[in-house]
Amino acid sequence: MPVITCIEDLKRLAERRVPRMFYDYAESGSWTEQTFRENTSDFEKIRLRQRVAVDMEGRSTKSQMIGQDVALPVALAPVGLTGMQHADGEIKAAKAAEKFGVPFTLSTMSICSIEDVAENTEKPFWFQLYAMRDQAYLRRLIDRAKAAKCSALVITLDLQILGQRHKDLKNGLSAPPKMTPKTIANLAWKWRWGMQMLQTKRRGFGNIVGHVDGITDPSSLFAWTAEQFDPKLDWAKIAEIKDMWGGKVILKGILDAEDAKMALKVGADAIVVSNHGGRQLDGAMSSIRMLEPILDAVGGEIEVHLDSGIRSGQDILKAVAMGATGTYIGRSYIYGLGAMGEAGVTAALEVLQKEFDISMALCGQRNIAGLTRDVLLVPEDFAGRWQ
Ligand SMILES: Cc1cc2nc3c(=O)[nH]c(=O)nc-3n(C[C@H](O)[C@H](O)[C@H](O)COP(=O)(O)O)c2cc1C
Image (cartoon, rainbow, N blue to C red; front, side, top):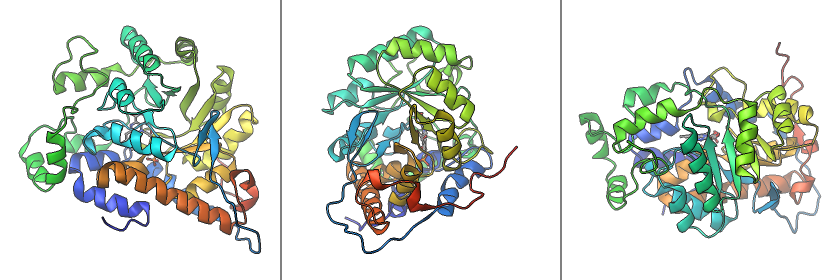
């Protein structure tokens, strides 16, 4: 087993093992990728206050997100096509999250179905919903998530229309991959991935195939999906979906103080400050820059989570110290999954926890409660004056 010391190690391994089409799918942002890049580079602008001569014994990284105990203030973000990074990817990632003690969020666009993940795990997971045009399908999806005992519904608001990621178009992204000469040539190098994929039946969109009339083959599926994201989604519809669900609701994709206030008004349990990992509106602000203005806007009346750009335990610490109740990781665990399956997701979580714990100690703190804005050094113009 290779020695893994940081998320970058997992990323390099994933690049070697995952077919180019799916590695690129994860490792890309929309258009120029400015927002994708700034999600990580803006974290680097924040520094930590080194403190000494403080008792560091008895530390804990435990916390809570929407009232649920978490071993680290981190949840696994919903990631479409996770089962193409590694065979049975969603089940593997959910198992790793469950054992580690953090929530797993299953994407609507997953390869393993809601039922499949529920059957192969013990604890409830969270389900991410894309609002779809087909109302009957939307309702069935919500009912299926309820039947699977999902403990929260994460409604994604920043993808009513798909952002363009150049590489996906150039690679002809599809699940399962179309056997073009280019794909076949690439797969020849990814024999480990191929062998594992041959041993599973889960190779299409598990939440869709068999649940929508007329969707049988991958090409009709891609066409159907592209047209299905509901461009008419508005706050009234969000309130309706919330009522249909009847349980805890997390609104994901909030990047503006006004939208955060609307989320508060519809009675969400939490919001996720997110720009979809830089995959939607290129030129939008990084999530970490928007965190403070959004926290100010909601004034502690709603739980505020953050994702986009987290690649280390220090990034988690920075977001939490700034005021986020919790964070989500997308690519950080996807690299782990592509690199080594379930063990890789566990490795990613262990790396993040270790970095978080040691940084917390060196900042002179022993637990989450001690992580306040005081441990950070943030440049005066960090939020910037944008008009
Ligand atoms: C390959 C990929 C697929 C994604 N698919 C979904 C999805 O199906 N639903 C969703 O709400 N967000 C999706 N996201 C966004 C993630 O939930 C999350 O917001 C993002 O990955 C956070 O940024 P990070 O990757 O820098 O941690 C996806 C992200 C990636 C990288």
